[in-house]
Amino acid sequence: MDSLSHGKLTKLTRNFDLSAFAPRLNYAYVPGGPSVTVVDASTLPGGTAVTRINVEVHDEDGNSKTGTIAVGGGTTGPMNIAGLNTAKQMRITATIVLDNGYTATGSIANIQPAGGQLANWSLRESSASDVI
Amino acid sequence: MFKKIAISALSFHLIIVAPNFGDLTNGTGIFDGTLHEFTLMDDIKSKAPIINIKRTRNIMQRRDAGCDIVYKKLMGVDVRQITVDDLYAATKICKNEFYQGALRDWETDNDDVFLEKIEPFFNEANKLDTLSNAWFGDINRVDPGTYTWSLNKYDGIWKWVATYFAGGVIPVTQTMAMPVSDKRQIFADAYNVIKGLYDRQNLLMRSWAPTDKAFYVSQDIADGYGNYLRSLGNGDSNTIAMYANGVKIREYEGIPIIPEPCWEPILAEIHGAPGRSAAMLTIRGNMVLGTDKEYGEGPEKDALRVWYDDNELTFKYQQFMRLGTQIALPEHVCFAIS
Image (tube, rainbow over all chains, first blue to last red):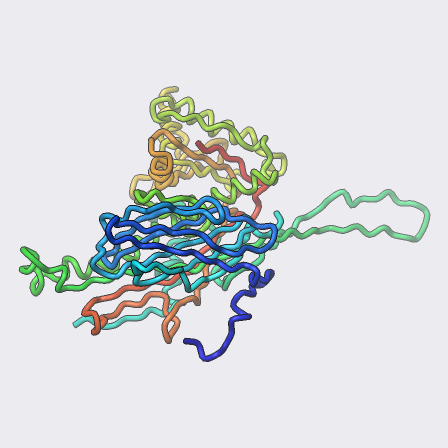
């Protein structure tokens, strides 16, 4: 919890206002698979498109499985997470890369079969968003 | 017995990060790769400009009979931006979970065999991850889950080379095709790459002195070039430096050929097969690594935090870094990569 309500400031970077970029990744966890599926539902600034979304599912023992989404609105498909320790908490981390250089990195801890979405988004702009 | 330690960000930068960039001019230091060839910018919070001051010429005028003097511009400025990404690494150990079975005998007597290796191995892992991403990092790269090298945590130099090549900043005339072959056996391929990159320099690049430039090559090209020289009966006469651990720096036309040992295994992992190589001819110091020597987390903004968590009965290690790369003068890069 932050004592200062600073939501409007966190999307400003030195050169850009990233407030038009609202990352959203929904996940579904099937313990019987066991599999995790992540679907992109982000809102992008006008004129931009998703280049890549790299997803990782981690367990408490330090193992990870990877998946990827290649287009906006796409899905990883069911990621087979056999080999992860499903008896302990698992966490999903993901990085969204847009074609204008914006990136967003987020995560969700303690994934549940009911599903949910990723949070804790860190928005950045990279040098690639400058005109060469 | 086990104290909590916290290393402030600045001392972490000087002790662990900065010596990776130490100068090897005395010739007797340990050669451990090309991380020291990067120019270090160490106070970047998120983004910083690299200012390229360009000289112009052609300012001479013929004198006329009047009193007006024509003044010309002497310098121009290009600005490139380097951004850094926030990164962290963490590991932990629960001694009770670890010392089970036969390992129970080790718990009280030989704890240092395992426990005291964690911190140096942790630092080494971070250094290797810094190096592999500094060259081949690409945040768009898909990790199939089998990679042993860290390759998609922040953008590295080869991604910038591809970006500048696609944008026309590096002209096609400065590149050549890299043959896919075992360059240690077909060593003419290795020689042709080195000669080819040298021949493809632009006019301005030729004005730099040979020791101000360098070839950065994967190990198979360096070895193949040595085999090529030996096959001609020249021995290894082009060796200009030999480090205490046996690494040879050869030369071509006075320009040092510096092998980067991690390139060959990384390229083999990316392509799933050996025989892939990379070579670059550029100005030394052209590659820039950005970091923030004051970045850390926790109440004291520490970069490396090691402590014992009573709640979980585990030793925890956390390391926080900001890293990013850029090429200062991309127009002066000749490259070949397969």
